[in-house]
Length: 325
Length: 256
Ligand SMILES: Nc1ncnc2c1ncn2[C@@H]1O[C@H](COP(=O)(O)OP(=O)(O)OP(=O)(O)O)[C@@H](O)[C@H]1O
Ligand SMILES: [Mg+2]
Image 1 (cartoon, chains in turn cyan, blue):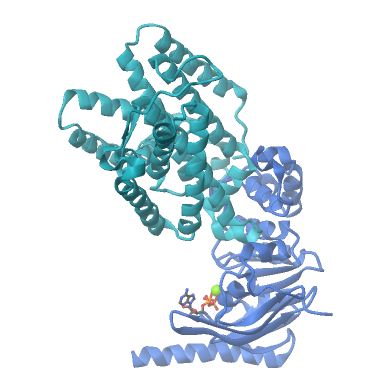
Image 2: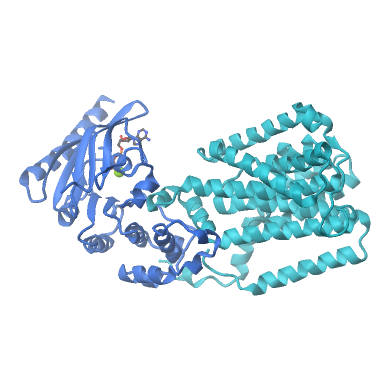
C-alpha cells in the first residue's frame, strides 16, 4: 500500500476517459445511447462506493442499496414536497441523510463479522425498503414519487435535463468518487483499514481503535453511494422502492467482485453490468433469467482469480517471491 | 515501587467452563517473568484478560497503577502494553516494512493528516532502522507471505517492540521453530531494553529459565507457585504439573 503510482498511469486513464466522454457527447451517439451511458456511469459510482468498503476494509456489506435509494428519496422528497430544485443542495442533502443512516447502521452492524454482518446489513436494506413502501405520505408507497423536476445546476446555466448535461454531471460524479476512493486507498487511513482487514486483533494490540476506523469507512462509503443514488433519481425523474431493493445491493457487490484487483475495476465492471442489463432487456423478456445465468457463470469463473493467473503467467515474478525460503 | 502490571483475583468462565479461578499476578518494572504450564492451563486466557481481549467475570487489572479493567485492547496498548500472539498474526497482504510502518504509526498522535499518504509521514526511515536493528533489514521489501516461519515470529517481536511498551507479553514466541530459529528468537528477547517488563509464556523450561528471573507455574486456571528461576522447588512444581497433567489425561483416556 505504500507503493505510489506515479501520475503517469492515472493521467493516461483520465485522458482516455475524457476522450471517450467528449466523443460520446459531441457526435455519433444517439440520445438513447447517451442516456444508457448516464445510467451506466451512475451504476459504476455505486460499485465504486462499495468497493471502498469491500476491497480495503474487507466488509462485504449488503446495505449499499439502502444508501443509494435513500439518496434518491432524499432528492425526490426535496423536489416534490419542498419544491427545491437546486442540484447541489439535493446532493448535499442526499449525502447527509445517507451518512447519518450509515453511522447508525455502522454502530450496530460493525460489532459483528462475516455472515452476521451480511445478515444485519441485508435486514437493514429490507427495513428501509419496507419504510419506503409503507410511509406513503412521504414516499408515495409502491408507486414512488413521480414528476421530480430536473434540478437547476446553478451557478451554471440551465437544468439537469439534456442528455448531454445529465451525462456530463454523472461522469463528473463518477470521477469524483474514484478520486475519493483513490485518496482513501493511498492514505494513512486506507493503510490502517487494510491492516485491520488483514488482522484486526493485531491492529488493536498495536493501539488502533479498529471499530472507529471501520465506522469511518462505512460512513464514507454510504455518503458516496448517495451521490449516484440522487443522480439516478434526477435522471429518471422518478424514485421507487425498486431503487433500494436488496437486489441492487447484490448487483453492487457483483461489480466489486468482477472488478476486484484494480482501483477502477469496479467502475468498469459497473458500466459493463448496466449495459449488459440494458441490451438484454431490449432483446428478450426473459432478461432477468439470462442475467442471472451470466452472473452465476461470472462468479464461477472468478474474474480476479483469472486475472491473477494470467498475470502470473505472463508477468515476470517479483524478486521477493524468489528469495522466499 | 508499584508493579507495572497487576491482576487481582481474576476469574473467567467461558461457555460454562471455569477457565481461570481467582488468579492474581504482579509484574514489576524491568522484570522478566516466565509462565509455564501444560496445554489448557489458561496461560493464553490470562494474556487475553491482561490485554483486554477478554473481560473477566471477577477481578481487576491495573497497568502502571491505573485501573484498566474496563479499558479495551487499543487503549491499553496506547498506555504501554504490547503483545505477540501464540499463532502468528501479521498483516499478511503487506510487506515487512509496511507492517512496521503501521506499528510505528500507531503511537503517533491522532492526526489531521489521516487522509494524506502514509508515505508522507516520514516513517520509512525509522522503520528501516528498526528492521536493521532487529536483523530483518534485508527482508524489508518482502511480502509477509514470502517470509519463513521463523522470520514471521521475528517480525511479530519487532512489531510488538515498535511502540516501546512498558510491558511486553510474549505468547510462546518460539513455538514451532527449529533449534536455530529458537536461538535467534531468544537472542532477540535478550536484547530487549532492560527497563521493559517481559512476561513470557513458554513450554520449554530451559528456554523459560534462560530468559527470565522468575517463573510462575500455572495449571487448571490457577497459579501454583512463583519463584526464582534457580529455585529447585519451582523445578519440582513444573515437573508435578506437567506429569500430573499427563497422568490425569491417561486416566481420562482409560475411563473413556
Ligand atoms: N473461547 C473459549 N471458549 C471456551 N473455552 C475456551 C475458550 N478459549 C479457551 N478455552 C479453554 O480454556 C482452557 C485454557 O485455554 P488457554 O488457551 O488459555 O490455554 P493455554 O494455557 O494457553 O494452553 P496452550 O499451552 O495449549 O496454549 C482450555 O481448556 C481451552 O479449551
Ligand atoms: Mg496458549
